[in-house]
Image (cartoon, rainbow over all chains, first blue to last red; front, side, top):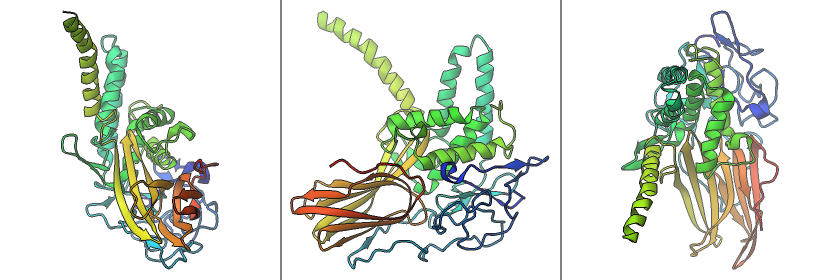
Length: 270
Length: 149
């Protein structure tokens, strides 16, 4: 993605994983997409330029590149989407809480990668939002944990504690209320509240942190899925890794963007 | 004396387990009352004789996931039945609920990430209610999500 462009996130199972092509400088260029061109409203081009999202183009209208400074494509939230079912009952009730993905959350900013790119969140149809624009601290912490973990593994005196160190670090940084778990606010004494607008970036952080720590994508998803299976009431053992697909895709997006060197080299590339 | 010995032996088991639980809880790697947080999004009273509740549950461990649930109960009764549960997506993640002729419930959502449970029929004290779902797009379709009768 050219500086100032947008990297599309993706639900890889149904629309195909993004095929990033880093150039010699490590810059990421998604293939076959008009670089920097905003997609027209309603256009359903997939990440790779193929039209692969069925006729319901309003669902994820922003999977292509959107250069910074251009108008974000997609339907405004107040417009009805074509093909969208409407309730015909005169007694229909609409749930009225603030919908996710809109600019209705104070303090929410767009994530900006070190090269100036942004990341499209296909699940909200907008750019990935976070309480902080810079996710470099996530990558730095991941690398530090990965380096320390491997150093402990190589030292016979500390090998036995390496696994405990990794688990503790994952908990401190990514566990509930952890440093990069942006969607929990509060503490364990007075309690937490959920900040639903940050759930996607929190999962993105899991992928980025694990990638920078040198874990493989499979290990990262197994760890996340293992905990979800035991402790989440939303987990589904029938799905890959027991993970909610949205969770899995955001972790994968964070992992893949880390893989392409956007945040620097991982501790030990898997 | 026997009681004292038994208490000491039990303490050898319970105290380390307690310390381990506390440690894991501090680093966020075990269940706590805050692992899953449920917020009530909307409560609808007496919609053609039924009460509805829409709630959102977010669970976090390593990564997090969210579901939206729709419950129904006859107006005035506390015991609610789960009709519909899904993983939300899009800018319009919550459902629109309608009841027609007192016997048919219509639930409309523009887009969901995944349907976790759908109940198509519900037998209440006042009769059987059918449920129609109008979901614009399911990003991750799952084969069978119908609730057991």
